[in-house]
Structure formats: structure tokens, C-alpha cells
Length: 434
Figure 1: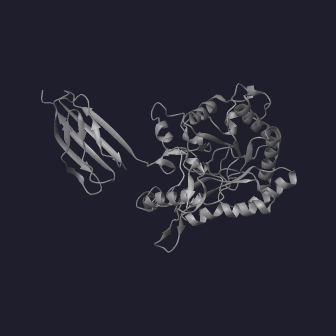
Figure 2: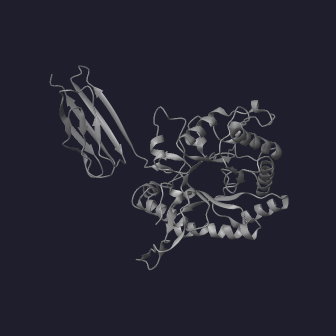
Figure 3: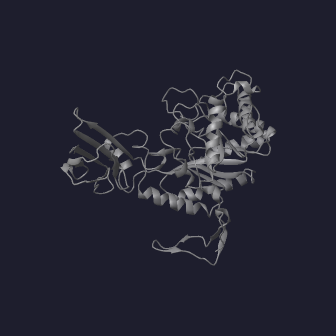
């Protein structure tokens, strides 16, 4: 097996083949190509907003993700007007050829953060998902498609040509919109979106023929919609550089088979050079319990147990898909999360929270520590209680209801004995002896 430090140079030796249910066939005498590092990408990048509270750049860099897709970044950077077209070009009636009509700086900053830790940028133009019910603001059909296309050209020009005090960054992949086949992302008609897509694609390719433009990041793999979109592109005499779509489910075989189906569709439509990209994929049993919930039972099932959203089934699914993708024609894949913690994060939605207080005479103090879904050993660093003794300690978890518990207390370190990997809370009272 030939290896170098660069993962892209590793030979993909002996494709893993599934035989009988209990057998995996591995052949190191055959090789099927080289590992494609572009299948190891994500929808997550460094955040601009919480850097003084939680900077996870080092953890993110340790994942060695090849690229970051910018979709939903406006939602995970609280209060920051970034990435989305309506934030960079906020007044669509103004002249899109004048750089003074754009607001680039916040997005400049967050894109630079990602590139500083070695991540390429996959830029999604358009808007983040808009969960506003019957009200909508950003997902509306633009009034003037040609003017909208000009604003996208201004954004690309800023980041790749240095326009408007911009940059000459290597951002090769630009996606036109996201999930036009679901209402939270597109409120116009199918015909209106196809016209917008073709108009923008033709305009962008005319000025930037060396860059890759495509999309539109379909929700699911709707082949009929793809065919209609490709037919419109062919009529307009313009070719997308890539076709992108999403997958949420629990069938790895179906997901791994999708690139071949789309490749066949593209070839038959006359676009053999159009690449295939799955740029959102995630294990999902049901949306009920993840996006809202019809009952508390649905919430529990979604978040607890081996088959939960972030449980061991999800982890095994991810590994199966990442391995399976390497033996497909898929050109790029991006795992969704777009966040750090929780349902769509790369870390469990856990947290440790502490609260402490003193009596008026400062003789006694208490510490309340809540460890929500923690998995690491639980310790607390306590200052200002030198020479104090532990008067009492109680624990609340799924088996103990505020039962007394023995804790270790020495040299300013409090060690709290969690029983297992489930959530737990501790209440400890100290008393000064001097």
C-alpha cells in the first residue's frame, strides 16, 4: 500500500466489499484509485460571533476537513450579517456595479478565519434557510433576475479579483442558491427559479469562465427537477460545472448509490463534464423530535439511545458513508452540520455549567455543577476555598435522587464521581476551618 503524508496520495487499496451479512471482503492485492480528500468536507467553519466565549478553531482544524460550505453561516454566527446575498448587497435597487453599495467586511472576516486553518471555501450564494412559517423575507423570488445576477458577479469579483478592496482568493466553487424545491429556501415558483438559475449561471460564466458555478443544492435527489433544470440550461447554451443535492436518512446503501444515478442523468442530458456534489448529508431517523416535536416521547427517541440523532448508529452510518463514497463517482461531499454543538454539530450537545455562592459571613460556600450529557471525567477547579472542608455533597442522576455522595477535594480540585456517561448534577457545601 503506497502512502505519503498527503492523504490525497494514499492508494485506495482493495475496495471493501460486502459479502454475506457477517463477512466483509478486503483485497490488498488490488487498488481502485486514490483517496479523494474532497469527500471529507463539511458545512461548518470557524465562527466569527462567539470567539471571546468559545473558540473551537483548534478542534475544527484537527478534523482536517478539506473545505467548508458557507450555507447557514449567518444562522450560527449570532447577529452577524454574513455570506447571504441580502447581507452583502442589502439594497437591491442600488447599482450592483458600484462597490460602495456592498457590505463585504463581516464576510471577509469569517472567510479568512476558515482559510487560516487550512479550509477551502465552497461559497453558497443566495440565502440561508428561513424557518419563518408563513412569513418570508429572504427566500422571495428576486424582482429583477438580471440585476440579482449582477450582484452575484460583484461578490465573486470581490473575493477572486480584488474588486472593491477585495481579495484574490482561491475560491473555485460557487453555488447558485440552496434547496429551491422546499419552501423555507424558495418561495417562488419552479419556473421562476429555473429562470433565475439560468440567468445567474450564464452571467457568471461569461465573466469568470475559469471558476466553477453550479448547484442548486436540491433537497433530496429529485431527478425530474434536475432534468427540467438541465434542459433549460441546454436551451440557453450554458452548462453548470456541478450538480449538487442533499440527503437526510438512514439508508447508507441508498445514499452511496445516488452519485451513479445522477452521473447517468447528467451524461444522458449532455453534460458529461458536470461534476456531482452531495453538500449536505446526515443520519436521520425522523424530523419529528429534531425540528419541533409532536410529543415528549418523540424528543426522547430523537436524542437518547443507540439510534438517536447523535448516537452510535449515527456514527456507524457516517463511517459507512465516508468509506462507501470513496468507491463512487462522487466528486465532493460535505457533511451537515453547520454548527458546533447539538443536532447539526460535530460535538455532542452537552455542556457543563457551574453556580457558586457564599454565606454573608463568608464561612460557608456552595457549588452547583450540572454536567449535561458529558462523557469526560468530571472535575472542578475551585479558588478561594483553601483550607475548607466539604460538609456535604449530593448527586442527582438517572439512578440517584439527591443521594449523598463521596467526593474528592484536594488542593483546589474537586473530583465528582459520575456513575456513567449520562447527565448528572452535584451540589457541594464547603465550610472554612480558619
